[in-house]
Image 1 (cartoon, rainbow, N blue to C red):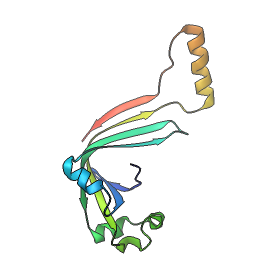
Image 2 (image 1 turned 135 degrees about the horizontal axis):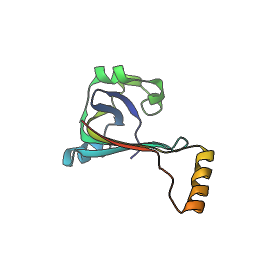
Image 3 (image 1 turned 135 degrees about the vertical axis):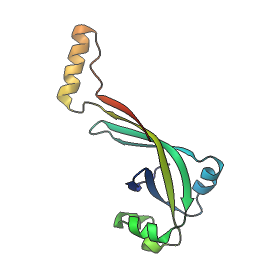
Length: 128
C-alpha cells in the first residue's frame, strides 16, 4: 500500500500510518517487508527489504512531523490516530537508468544497427 516515508535515519525508515488499519495486524503476522520507490521521470528505482514494527511514540512523531502529513492527520503530530511504522533495513537495491530522450534514441539506434542492447545504467545491491 502507498505510504510516504517521513525520514530515514541510520538503518531505519520511518513511516506514519493511521491507527486501526490492517498494517499492525499484518506486520504482527509477518514483519518481513519490501519497500519500493521510484521516480519514473529520472528513471531512478529503489527497493528496500527489512523488518517492520508498529509503535506509538508521540515524541518521535513530533520529531518526524511535516505539514504535508496534516492531510492524513488533521490534529497534527499529536493526532491520536497517528502511529509509526519503523522498518529496520537489511538490504537494498537501486537502479539508475539513463533518463534522457537522447540516450533512449541512441539505444534504439544501437539496437537496430548492431542488434546489441544498450547498457541499462547502474544497478547495485547494498547489505546492512
